[in-house]
Length: 377
Image 1: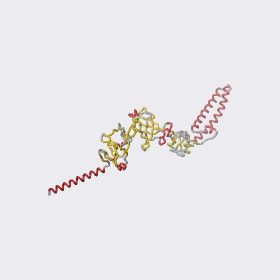
Image 2: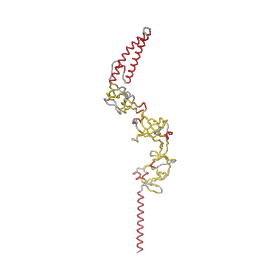
Image 3: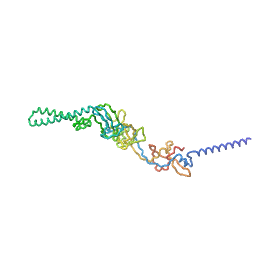
Image 4: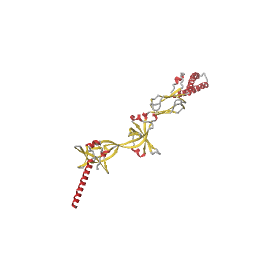
């Protein structure tokens, strides 16, 4: 009886051992990658299903950058605020916010009694000046011939000069209002004046309505020439030594990081803001980039201080194990399988999804995509 139990127990033990062995074999067959003679095996079916890729190192520009912020602004000659020199009522508005205007385009029209009074005064002064000029010329002739007294001549001369000064002053005011003095002297009096754009650009501000009463020096519109926009940015004191004129800048709106624009360092400030401990600098924006910019737009700024071109691989192709780095290199292809070996590498800096490969220039046939799907010891 004891021999029978011993026999049965032995059979049971062998059965369990066989089942465990089969189970381990099945699990190994289900792994994404299996080891064979120290090689990593990947089936072609899995390679295609998981969209893996094999490639070689490529040259990539690794850039050391200073990250900061800034804003878009205009040069003093690239922005204009339009106001009226005389009070009146807004009669017509020709342009609105967002409109492109050329230099000399009419923006709005102001109607005013003061304009009429100014022209009447100018016409009266012009007529008086003609009469006084005739008297002055006559008295000057008499004075030169010693026919009249010096006192009478000086009185006429003083009146002539005063009237001439008044005429010139009124004429200057009329010209400031963009009216034609010659037409006015002929009796062509206007009840309104036009306000014109002093430069090419876009209307960025409108502060007037039809029928609105406006006063002198009140800003009614603003025009910005986008071609004269530049980048104003700020750098901390510790980074100023890295800056040089001509360095390349990448900048973008925080709300649209996918659209990167370029500029070049144009000037570096010489004083530190005591509250922010930063230095104000300027950069010229590439002309091709200016059409999409807005005056006052806040941007993130990356200043390229150094640039190094080196062999690199996608960062996702590199396997990290402690302080060591590896890649998977294809060594052969048999039947429906690829075979890879782990190859140690030395790496440098990593930027924008690429990692520098240091020293090894003979890398090829590297698994550059899909490595994260594999369990590699």
